[in-house]
Length: 236
Picture 1 (tube, one colour):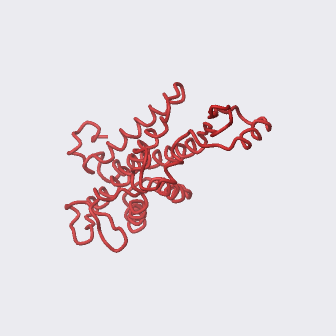
Picture 2 (cartoon, rainbow, N blue to C red; picture 1 turned 90 degrees about the horizontal axis):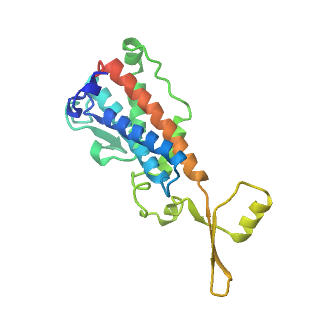
Picture 3 (cartoon, one colour; picture 1 turned 120 degrees about the vertical axis):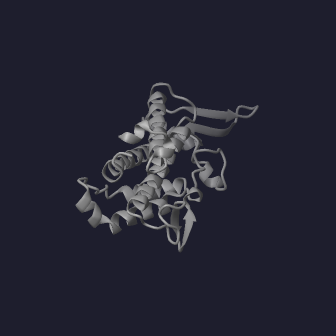
C-alpha cells in the first residue's frame, strides 16, 4: 500500500486508517504480553486501544466514500470538514465518538453505493451478520470513548464493572468452591475480632469477553480499510 510510505497528511483519508492500524497493532502486542506477563488492570488499555481503532477505522471508511464519490456532508461539500449525521443533524466528525452513529452512516454508504462497488471493485463487501450486535454491545459499554480511559465516569454503577476485582458474597464464594469450579483469588477483610467484613474476588470473565469482541471487530474493520484503500484510492 502506497500510504504506508507517505506522511499521514498525504493519505487519502487524512491518515485515519493508518493510525487506526497502529492502535490495533499496539493492542495486539499489549494483549500478547498480558497473557504471558499478567499486569493489574491491563485489560483497560487493551480495550481502549481496540475501541479507539474501531472508531478510527469507521471514520476512515466514511471519509474515503465521501471523497472518492464526491458525496457532500449534508450542506458541506465532500472536500470540506468531514461530518456525521446524528439524528436529524450533521455534526463535525471530531465531535462524534460514539460507534453507533458512525456505524450507521458506514452501513448507509455501503448500501447506497452497492451498485458502484459491484461494478468497480472485485471485493466481496459482505460483513458478518453479528457485526451490528457487536457494535451495539461495545456502544452499551463505552458510548463516548471514556469507559476504558478513566477510573470514574458519569455512570457510577457501570464503573463498578470495569475492575477485575469485584465485591463478592462469601456464601456464594464457598458454594462455588464446593462445586470445584476454577481456582479463585480472593481477599477477605476482617475486623479486629476476626469477623468477616467484606469479600472481594478476582473475576476477569467479563473483561475477556469484551476484549474478544473488540478484537474481532477491529480485525474486521482493519481488513475493510485495506480493501477500501486498495480498491477506491489506489493504495493512497
